Length: 201
Length: 90
Image (tube, helix red, strand yellow):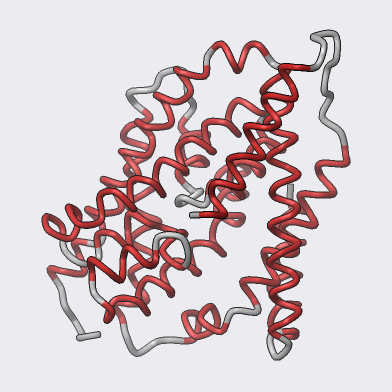
């Protein structure tokens, strides 16, 4: 949660700085942000590859429910995003799916989509995925009550491994912490691949 | 964009090689945080300079919330399949 505030603070500080600059200044997208983005993906990859849970999740074959959990979250998220995209005529199906494929990982999905599709979609990805994280934190008890103990893990998406893990453990129970960690890290790793596939398919 | 994905794949493999040195993994996590802060500051900057995006911030927010509701409803519904078919206990 502290990290989320720092991340948001940086974004807001950027907006403020942009407002204070004279309007004659224009920021043209350049290669520097692409280099930083490549470095970011390298570091995020090291974090994923260096996490034992990721390789355990990739190897595990004997528990079908555990293996299906992140897959169903992917399918459900994309189908759900596609359905509500019908309500948003100003948005293409491809863009709606790309935003959904952030699975709550708002920092990564927003900078990826800013670089590839422009700042408008980057801002939508930031707000949408941030909403998903906050909704998980707020709705966890209701989700457990009405939709079962797996529901907060599904709602949390990629955040189930870190920022929403404490709340999931609290309302779904300690025995669901491994499921949350596995699902969260598999979805975290899936974000760049799925966004790439959706934008280029 | 394939280059970005390539960096990610190289990172995952590198992380596997480095996983015995958890200190290095933590350093990579810190560097990831630093790069994300920089990129989000730049995104904020371009939003601050772009009156178009700022003027439509409310509309963008509404679109974002609608998309999130769809994503949450879809994912929560999909995992109900696991509750219906408990093939194996945890």
